[in-house]
Each structure stands twice: as C-alpha cells, then as structure tokens.
Image (cartoon, rainbow over all chains, first blue to last red; front, side, top):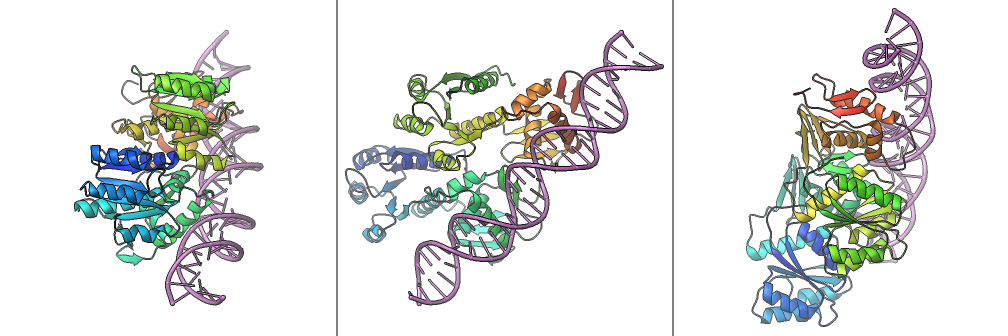
Length: 234
Length: 234
DNA sequence: GGGTCCGCTGAACGTTTGCTGAGAACCCGC
DNA sequence: GCGGGTTCTCAGCAAACGTTCAGCGGACCC
C-alpha cells in the first residue's frame, strides 16, 4: 500500500472479470496511478483512443475480441502505448512474447506485487524514467528490483522468488505496519486459499537470511503484523 | 467520543442485528460522520445508489444476500465506494475472499476503536487524504497510527495491542474525561463480559510505560474517570 | 480522626500468538 | 524420471498477553 502524492502515470486496465478488474484498479490507484477500466475489447480501443493512457494492462481472454487483436488495433492507430498482458498459465506465453505485441506479460493467477513490478519496469524502459528508483535501501539492506538482487552489509544474498517479493513489499512499505492478511493479499497470488501461516514461515526464512545481526530490521508487532524499520527510532 | 464540527464523510452501515447497527451508527455519528443504516442487502444497494456514501460498512452475514454479493452489486454499479467488512472470527476463508472486494475488514466481536481506525485508514487511502494526521502528539508523547508506534520524550516505547488502543483513545480525547464504562465500551470488544477492573490494570500498565516522569499526563478523577491532559493549564 | 470507599499494583492464571524444524507435495531442468 | 530447490502445512514450544483478584494505601465523608 504505497501512497504517493503525485500521479505516476495513466493506466487502462482491460479485463472482463469484475473481481480482477477491481482488485487491480484499486491496488493500482493506491500505488499512485490514475486508472481507467474497460470490460471488453471494443470499450478498450475506444477508451485508449480518447484518453491516451501511458500503458495498457490487457487480459488476453476477452468476450468480443482477444487481447492480441486489441493490441494490434492500438498499434495500427499509430500509438506506441506499451502493453502488459494478463494470460492464463498454460502455454499462451510463447504467443505473447512471440507476437511482440506485448512489452511484458503476467500469468494468471498473479500477485499484485508482480503486476506492479512489471508495470513499473515497462514504464521505466519505455519512458526512460530513470529517476524512478530501482534500488531500495534500508540500513545495510539493499534491493535491486531490476537485477532481482539483494545485499546485506554489502554481501549478496540468495533469495527464493517468494522471499524476494516479501522483502520487496516490506521495503517499499518501510515504517508501515503490514498485517499478515495485507501481506498475503499483495505478495501471494490472488487465488491462494491457505492461511496466514505461510507468511510467518517466510518471515522466518527472511530473518535467517538477512536479519541475523543486531539491530534487527524486521519487527513483529503481536496481534498486529510486521514492520521493517530502520535502526533509528526503534 | 470525538465530536467534530464538520462532517468527515458520509457512511452507510449495513447490519441486520439492530444492536450492532445502533452501536456502530451512534458511535460513528459522535465521531463526526454522517451515517445512514440499512438492515439487509436489498436496502443497502438501494440506499447506496441514492445517497452515494463515501464508504460502506458491511456485515458479511445478511438475511437476503451476503455481503460479498452486495459489494459485487456496488462494484457493478460502477461505483468505487470503499467497503469495510464485518466478519465472524472463524471465517478465515471469508477474510481472504472478502478482501478481493473489500478494502479492509474487522472481525466480530470488534471494538469501536478498531472499526474507527479502519474506516479512517481506508478513507485516507482511497481519498488520498494524506493530510489527515496519522500522528498524535500530547506534550512529549507521540503516537503514530500507521507505524503503530509510540514515543515518550523521543524514546520509542513498546506497547501491547490493548495498551496501544487505550492510549490512542485517551490521546484522541485529550482533555476530555472518560469514565471507565466509556473506555470499556470503546476500547474493549462489545461482548466483553468482565468488569471495569481491567481498565484500572491497563491504566496502571500505561502509566508505568509512558507516564513515569513529572508532569504527569494521565490523571485520575475519583469516582468519575480518567483524563489525559497536557501540562499547561493543569 | 475514624471508617469506608475507591483506585493502584503485583502476582497468578489460562489463553493466544508467533517462531521454528521437519516433512510432504510440487515444479523445473537435466 | 531423478534431484535440487521451493512452497506450503503442521505441531510442539516459548513468550507475550489479557484477565482476575487480593492486599494495600490514599481520598473522601461524616
């Protein structure tokens, strides 16, 4: 839940499932984007023409025309709007990358953390927005989003994908308490049915890898959640 | 019981139990919100359409349709009203699925303190109301809601969840006398059966942690209640 | 000044919460 | 299909937490 006081960019989210559309748009808004939504391909093309978004998040499966067709139309319009596709896990991936219509894609079911990362990466590439920080630092902890790398006290650390996403989420929200439910919501896939016990396990893994020495950075607030806090003020 | 001279926002409270509906709406009104109530899902959708509230407080269990269905309808209506769910404690699944449609949730039995905190947090996030202070200060006492942290004379203090809620309630009501019954009502869950002795215990804990030095901030008014008062004018 | 009431605090308790190690299920590359 | 890495579940354990209670001391009233 990163709240910024400026608009990062204007996005168009296209998906026919209202749940996913709302999940995405709400979360993107909270991250500082201006978001419009469309429920099918026709609406999408219309909207894109009118409001000229900086990026389009596009489901491949749409009721009227598929995402590739939509992307094709956008290209024909002469626009160079970057597109991030949402695809089902099975095999469509090759098509997406092969067609070179997408700048990136995310497979369903995704986690918000993932979608946000892809969108930011694409915007950075296409706009040359180099001032968007790609490196997060908290005390002697460093995380590079692009290189997908983490250092503790200058030493590189190996993290599994989930560990990385969790640490990233904690670092983006430095100083803010996150409940296990919130963490689950952002870091895990949206269809994850399990309970918050996983979060405990992963916090434990993370601590072992990046938070063994004093002063500790990852704090447990009993009954509330977790915070990553820089030494001063603790 | 914070009484403000302006309306913070318009809320719609939906619950079929009259007790809870009234408890909530009375307390929210006293906190400066404009409150409407509905007893079932149909009424809720109707009302929401007409009066366009800024936020909906929605019980998951309703006689006609469940809260998720109501939230779904609201979304379909194209509204972006934030929703705060009220759920039973045991429905862990509810929480996860609920969050797809909700911006936050509170488990029953809740304390008014909790519900208020969630509502404010959601409004802050969704409206971009970043200037609403997240930090309370009284003399050399500071409390940050987001970070869930307290400082006394610049030094961080560790508080348990209940201690934190109590101090928060005292600070929000600085200068106002609160009876033990009132405190019980706001800080403890509404189904708490015990007596006011707990409040005494917790005031004692709090004093030990944040009010050891002169001038004292937490004052006892014999036979009446407690006040938190800044030094000047005491 | 004495009796009574009220509030303070330390100790004790049962309960809840989170941490961790072990292991089962899974995926992926070879 | 085998092995390493990864994800998730679970159960036992330890510490923190909420609550009650009793003994004490100070405040209030007559």
